[in-house]
Image (cartoon, rainbow, N blue to C red):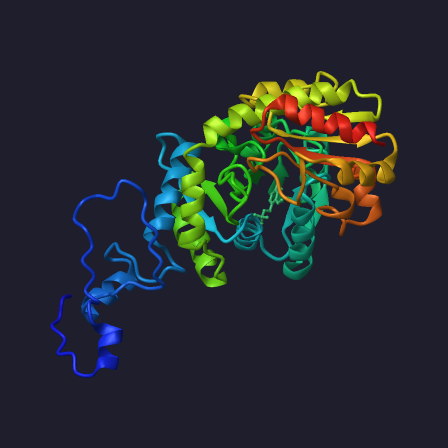
Length: 402
Ligand code: PLP
């Protein structure tokens, strides 16, 4: 590949001089960022073999990239254990969901989901149902009779669910669901963003695909947006899902992949502190006179306290709570918090709050919001790694000023 260039003009030199990079032969200790759109493909024969897939190698970063591939292997390894799974990184969590549905569902299919998904997920499912022409049915996925009833008349192609859900932390009994779907040949997708593979591994419970917004806990520092799809179905991932990702152009950039990689190194440490903080603050809020309801899996009063315990290794660091004073009380609370921040994401090092009714879930019709428990007085809180007593004092003060 190393051709000698007889550099003539200075302007040509600015382009080509020193171009045969001296990449070190030593293995870098930390993952390098391969910020290149393409890779030199050598002779025409080499290029043909690369493009045909007869020879392994990188061609174009929308297809695959060494930095992105390293992070994909890390995620697949964590989620699938020693079994050989695949992860495909995408430009965002929404891209992961859209690419997966686009690839798996056809016109005329019947797909099932539930109320209470992240607002964007409900919106994209409804949009794709309309554009592709599939039927989208909302059911209680913890009630096998509801599923069996639909399956009796129409064959279900796919079930999409979120467990625990954002922001009510409702859980789906994953084992019970996959026992039903396995016998019926129904594809299952679980959005496992809130748990990450460290707290819950849906694939080990029989789910076909997991999707993640890496933007949240996986990267963990609030400085990047990306997503991924994970599955043990290697063939379909390599041939079909990656093909859709390439053609749609929903690939993850090497910079974002690198930030996710670096963030993931501390995922376990971060989660230990975040989960402990969530359980501590949920108990505090549960006893607070200004709070009418706390949705956190650690509380025995939560509808899915036991289910969460049975399928998650810890209670996730996300909760929501309802203020007795409704939206006015939320306004005052947001104006008075000092340590806790008001920002529309979750999973960061800082404790963050958001008002789902006017932000993440604002585009849902009133009726759907009501069914999903998204009320005007509801605040979502994602706990960070701060000292729990500082957080309690900040929240306590903001609530006293109601
Ligand atoms: N899934 C869940 C549970 C989310 O909370 C979000 C965003 O908040 C998404 C998916 C979408 O992720 P992204 O913002 O990375 O596209």
